[in-house]
Structure formats: C-alpha cells, structure tokens
Image (tube, rainbow, N blue to C red; front, side, top):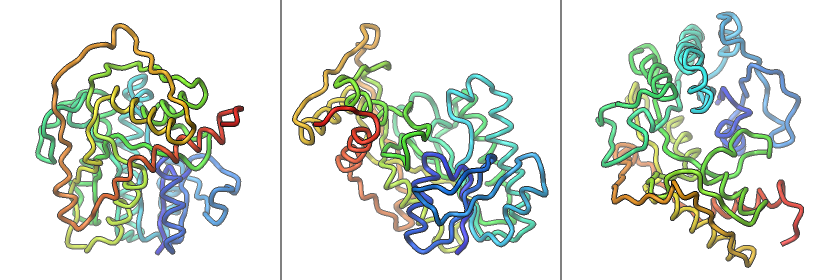
Length: 313
C-alpha cells in the first residue's frame, strides 16, 4: 500500500511515517520544501508539493492509495494570521482533495483538532457537541473538515485529536510548545517546570503512540464507514498541575530527582470543572487504546536527556 503523508517531516507525520514503514507500507513524505534523505527514515520518498499548483498536487497523488493530511498551521501561527490559516488549513485541504479524486486515491484521512468544540474543553464532549470555538485555529480546521465531510466521491475520515504528547523523530521538530513535551524538556534542562497556564485547567491527553495506532486503524477500516468524524482522545483527563506532578514522579523514578514545580501567582486559580472527551464512537470500530501514559512520558524524558542535556544523570 502506498501512503502519502503531508507534513511528513512534522511531529505526527514523522512518527506516523516510521510506524507505517515498519508495518509494510510504502511511505511518501509530502512537503513544500525539498528535504535531504532523513536518518530517521532513509527509505521514505520525498514528494515536493506546491499547494497552489493543481499539477503539483496531481503528481503528488499519482499512484497513491491513501492520503493522511497532517500538514497545517498550529494554534499560535493561526492566531497571528487568521486569513493565512483559513487558506492553509481550509483551502489547501480542498486543493489536495480535488487532486486526490482525479488520481482515484482510495482514502483521505484528515487530522483535525478537539478545539473545534471550545477552548478550554469542558463537560462531556462527543461528536454531536456544538462547535463554538471562534479561534482561527478552530475555524480554519473546521473549514478543512467540511470539505472532507461534504464530498461523496472519496472515502474520507476526520479525526479530532485532543492533546497528543510523546517524543518526535528528531529534536528540531516543532513540538516543544505542547504542554507535556515542554514540561519534559524543562524538567531535563532546568530541573524545574514553570507552569504558564491556569493550573486547574483540565485537558484530555493521548499518547502519540495511540494517535498513530488509531490513524493506522482508519487505513484498514472497511470502506462502508466513510465521510465521518471521530473524536481521538486518550480517556485521560487531568489538570495541568497534576500532569506536572506526574512528570515529576517519572523523573524521580528514572533519574532520582524531582524537578521543582513553579507556579506563576496569576495561575493559582482552582476550579471544579469536569471534562470527558468521549471516544465511544471510535471504540465502536474495534480500536483499543494502549494508554501507556507513563511509558510515553518516560520516552519523552529520555529523548530530552539525549538531545537537550549536558548532564549525566
């Protein structure tokens, strides 16, 4: 099976490419930039994509069986330029979708975000929960979703991912603004973790390992299930302070020290909110979470030790 991963050199795309290759897929990494052969997956083939050029997109889709669209602007970038976010996360998705149909691509998997619902996420959230978030990151991803869900000429899936974490393929991947990854890096580099958000804010966390396994399950899913949206979360909702404490406990277990947790005064708010990011629809397909939270934290800490520390622990 030939799989094109857009954003294949990014956070989810890179780990996904490694996984799919080791499971027998022929992997193509789509990118707007030309990359040298990677040491983390030298067997992958690079496909240069011009998102505004229909011919470039058509050639990228040629002889491809499945497209996994991970490329897009993150929340910070989207806030700084909302019009560009709508173009990149929305229109570029449709540009790729149209090219995919001309080349008879069998399946199109679009990675969206849980934040289309609200920010922060609160209460019981399933796929029927109203979409209220007006942040450009959310609205631009919703535009991308709508292109997939309204098209009946290709098998399409939309996955709304909660807060993924875990080690990337290499240190230069843009993933160190993610809460768990950031705290793991701080714990190694500074032996302290500064919390810059409301410490009582609940988040649903999912290991990157589970994200990748779930995506793989949609590659193999029977074709009668299509043009639908699924929540992809980890069924592990804790607040930011609790996550910092968990990372601290893993540091103690691995390295025999506990990093200091530093809380800014304005972030000492406490609330009794509840969050359940419901993935029953996903589980009804037969998918099961491995949910190895500690293992993924450990792997992230060890990655940071290898790549960001001069200390020998």
